[in-house]
Structures are given as structure tokens and as C-alpha cells.
Image 1 (cartoon, rainbow, N blue to C red):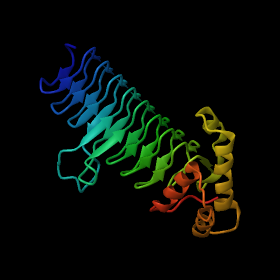
Image 2 (image 1 turned 180 degrees about the horizontal axis):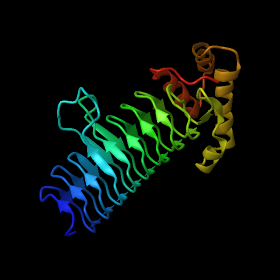
Image 3 (image 1 turned 30 degrees about the horizontal axis):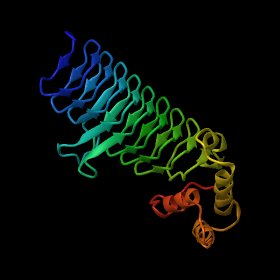
Image 4 (image 1 turned 90 degrees about the horizontal axis):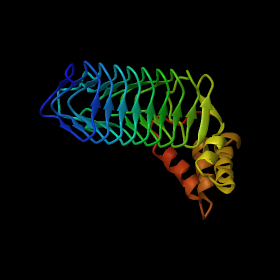
Length: 254
């Protein structure tokens, strides 16, 4: 620790490890069993849970790249067991939501950028070089391929997989595979859903819902209305309907 700068005001848990030439600022809270490599900056506002690993050169909780930011006190929260790889840059929130956050057991690969007021769920994989604008929301178990740029305020649903390099400017609804230029619906993420314990019946319900949304010839509003006529809508389909209802940018096309 002799070559690192660690503020005496920072709150640090047990079994903490840190490499050379790293810096931990004043307003930082770090849990137990956290490992921080060399040349890492943990800036004011960082809230790091237990069992997190942060690799060489990463930057956590630096000020937002937002011209409206006025120096307000905000945070960047990292959930339990998450891994942050080399040179990832994670900006804290603004007054909009007061924080940015990455959930538990996520894997944030090298050179990724998570901007201000982004909210990322649990068990999410962000591949190398993914670049997020502000206010992006990503649901649990999503996988974002390498070099994907994500437009500000975009929402990405649970269990989504987006192929590498595809620009994401509209909302991506739950459970699907997305790819192509412009980004579009490429099918249901069947392999991922099976790995996570979805039954054949649940997957069938999801496929039927997306057949109505993308293959029936109806526009999205009419397709949602048709699905909603079912007196007993399965929970997995309700998740799709709720996502579409809350979409501000509109969902990707089929």
C-alpha cells in the first residue's frame, strides 16, 4: 500500500487489497474482500460492495461528462461480486437521479464507458469498448456485445443479447436477440433463457408475443392491444408489455 494514496476519511472493509499507484479519495465506501489493482482511481462518491474486483487503470465515480453538472454530491454504486476490467470509466450521477449504478455479479470489460445516471441491473455482461450515453437503463442478465454505442436514455430489457458493434438508438425489449444495421429484432434469446431456467412453456409464450408484435402486420400499439385481450396474461409476457408501455424512445423494429 505504500505507493498508493488512500484518504483517511474513506471507509474501507476487511481483507482489502490494493496495487501500486492507486488513489482512493475522501467520500468513498468500500466493503469487504475488495481487490483494487494498480493505477486505479476511486473518486468521491464511490460505493463499492463486497467481493468486487477492479482491474488496472479503471476509473470509478469521476464527475459526469455533462455540461449541466454543477458539482452536486452524487454517487456511483457497484454491487456485490462485480468485476470491472482494465481502463473502464464509470461516471457518477447528476441531480437527475443522484447516482449511477452497476448491480451485483456484473462483468464490465475493458475500455467500457458507463456514463452519468446509468442504471445497470444484476448479472449483466458489458463487453469490451461498449460506450454508453447518459441515463441508459439495462435490465438483469443482459449481454451487450463489444464496441456497441448506446444512445442516451435508451432502455435495454432483461435477458437481451445485442451483437457486437451494432449502434443502439431505440429501446430493446426483453428476452430478445438484437443485431443488424439498423438494429432490429432477430429472434428470441432461447439459449440464454434456457440457461436461466425458463420453461418451454414460458419461452413459447414469449415467442408468441413477439410473433404478434413483429410478424402479424399490426403496428406495435395494435399488437399490444391484441395481446392484452387475453384474460390471463403470463408474467413473462406482462414484462414485455410493461417495457413497451414505459418506452420513451420507441422499440427497435423487426
